[in-house]
Length: 286
Image (cartoon, rainbow, N blue to C red; front, side, top):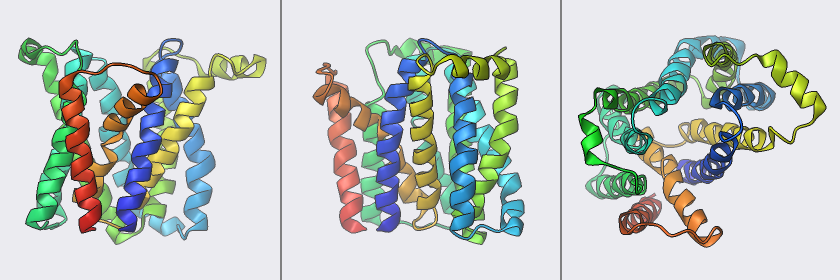
């Protein structure tokens, strides 16, 4: 049950992060937000990891898996979202818990009860439905660029499964330290590819944080949300916690309806209801 609670907390952080980072992207390149992610990872994940029992040997054992996670779950996702139609790419990437479920069955030998499987499928289905927006077009599936978001979803599923495997062998806190370390070179490479100079970022930060406020807060929430995701792997099966962390998209829509008074389409509403039914079902079963 603890893993389920932490996974839902992760989804809440991710929802708030999604809203703030989308707002920041109007002013800044996404690579800048990713750079702030890496900085907060160093400041938060490394001390927290060692406080809760991380060891040098444990961190070293996690480094390879951390590199895989940084590339497959993070860098590839940024690349996928920059290719093809964004509305379709978002839907395709949201299918990643399906692949996590499949990989976990054969790599981690996670076997679910019929009731657990039903509620998890409802959660995944609801999450995917909430990603459909007014710009979504079936015809865009014919584009070759759609292969990248699909491969990205498969990559995230594989990455989460392998992360769970190494966490079972060491601990989530060892992995937190490892991922914080490897994110730095990934962030610098991403800035280089995006033609952003981190020296300019520091200069502008000294003159004032107004331009970066949404990116900084969003990145902080992302680090907290991702940290909760990794810790949840320590206390529950990835087949269960991965779909729960993916429900940040329904939370974003709920926020938009309640606080921003935005209208959503009927498919999104069905998705929210379906995802919540699945989530509450998983909570009840434990």
